[in-house]
Image (cartoon, rainbow, N blue to C red):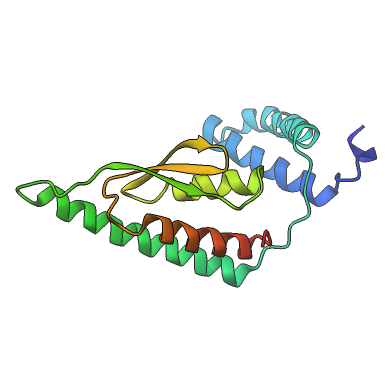
Length: 163
């Protein structure tokens, strides 16, 4: 059973059940008749998710995580203005192409989360993985894409204790 699993903990189970219940309420609505079904569905989803993906100990560094979040938000705004500037020009100033970035994060959830975060950056889109390299499709390969990704990855690794 799940409780025999060393990675099982009540806090992790409650967090997942609460998350699944919140998703249920967003999808199904707040009708009182739906709440018992939602509680059952959330409990079942939490149980299955714990069986498939056990809780892993995590001690995030919140200050570093906040710094990373602010850096990503700032980068998104700057890149958004850069894309708008390029679009509004009479001649598009684009140098599209693919860039391979060697990822040092171990395979698994942390690497997948890093890829998802990088997909939020305007102008650059993760297009796949080739071995240990993340393939990025960029609107302008003359930009310092590799250096930006290396800085993001280092800060992400520090924030999630994957250094």
